[in-house]
Length: 283
Image 1: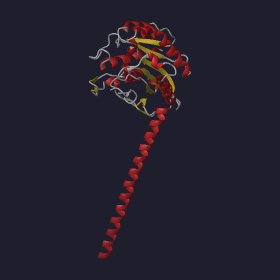
Image 2: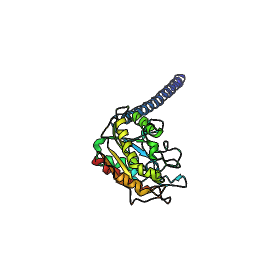
Image 3: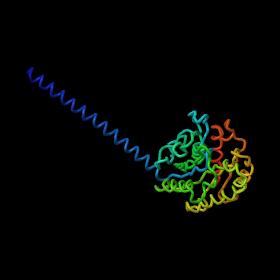
């Protein structure tokens, strides 16, 4: 009996270990399947049924809020917090949940911080939940010296990159909802560039609408308040004077600048994002 008891004890112990091993394996497999399902849902949600918003321009669209001495302070305001309904297209053309800095892998030759994109997106969804998902497509390039509007001309690298990224963004069935444009500081250096700005901006908007197949695509652009040269008012006048259907201009005048007197502060970027959203929703 004792031998049988020991034999039964060993058998029960082995059976328990087998069950434990089986149970642990099941848990790991279940966790793995849940992860796959979650990733599949994320990809599915991110690639279909979203409204695509293109963010283009130079450093103030890319975002320098909270950046000093080439270091971002890491502070993200409540209005710019991540939202599971807001995605961004990364530099390697994949969708992930959006969070600042939105342009960190796009405007790679500069330190990016807070821009207007997240505050814009959160405000839009706050005001119109029926939009569902937003897909932000960062395309702004500021770099160490900024970019002039002539560098965004049809056929130039920045223009082609914007089209390529947008094509990928809508390949899963997304709808291009609009363009946010904030640029012009680099065109304040030369009087000729400043005087040509209005014509070049109209050409840019018309070309983008034509190449994206959306002749009335909503566009909201920003009238600058700072610049790298003496012709800020000339560029501002051109921006404020644009008269195109479904195009609105938001005036950044009065928003707070960083000590460099060129880039918007974090608070200013949040306010600008909400202003852009309010104007966009009216379109």
